[in-house]
Length: 76
Image (cartoon, rainbow, N blue to C red):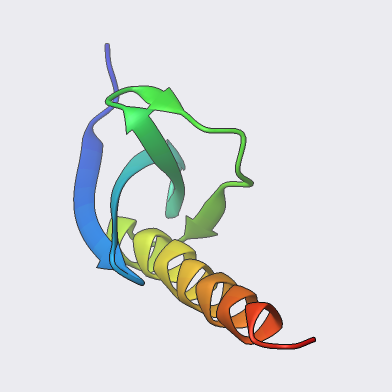
């Protein structure tokens, strides 16, 4: 049996992201970025008690990473 996959399309810092979330155990969901549906990237997965929680954690991290990169790019 194939587990259900929840997909979220997000635009963060002007870039489109496809996030997939799968159930790994009771009340534990894993979110990761995909380049092609079903193929996760090497980025660390994020976990939550619901698909939305897991995807939200990953989105929050991406927003902080983009903000930090933009701040670092502006320094000399």
